[in-house]
Image (cartoon, rainbow, N blue to C red; front, top):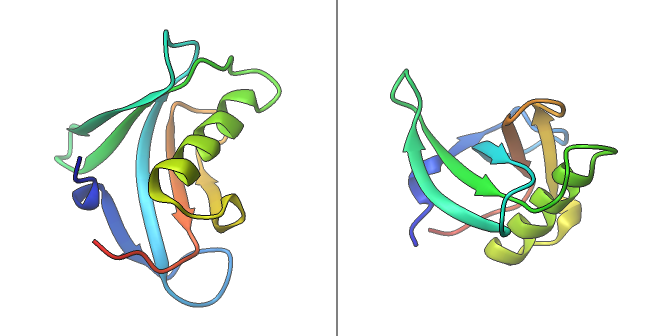
Length: 101
């Protein structure tokens, strides 16, 4: 699956330098952990639909999200940071790494 359209190149990350932002709509307590594809929000901006079986308590769903993203995109978890939406379904994850699409 091609997820490149959901990424935005950005320099607003936690460290200096360029990286990538990924907008996500997370559904916790799903039947299975998976990436559901790309959708558009009301403004027409793309986001990635992600489902995790973890509950949204004690940061478990966020941890499951980062685990899935690290595995899917083959990047270290240390390069992934939730920079917006820690307690919301709508999140922005910063990839502090170079990605090739």
